[in-house]
Image (tube, rainbow over all chains, first blue to last red; front, side, top):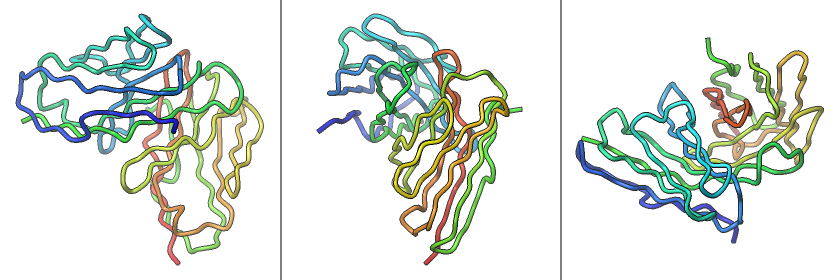
Length: 116
Length: 107
């Protein structure tokens, strides 16, 4: 089954304790991305990756790191989480977005992070 | 001012009604996405389009590049269509999202 998986689904942590949210896709997609969703602000892009070893900042990259060592995995790293990073996080993947056609983004189920 | 504006923010309808959700944007884009977010939080991509019109079942999406406007129509709405509908534009290689339209369809 084609899917994007995220782990963990729920996480409560304390300020400053490094954490990693994993994202994996089994569709051989080149493009992967991380978003956060906050009430009243909607979805905002954190980082994206066009392919292995190629990553770029989205609109809200501060406080986050990513890596793309393998095509299927795109982990999101919070080196020193703070309460303002409490949010719902989504990972997504797709073939390169600039191709016209029926391509779409496949979203993971979301990770609800609380930083106290 | 947001680069992507959706209207209305909230919408209620009776089952069977024709629904229209609008999306206007202010930047030059290469494509536009319509997404559906279920009450449980999961997000599904409905359409990606860069011109014209696309149809999938009871859903129709249109885009007018010159006017920087897109619409999502739902024909014969059903309570299972209740969700948040999100417009997102592809600007360079980034997606910029609207804040969504919450639709509730009552039997």
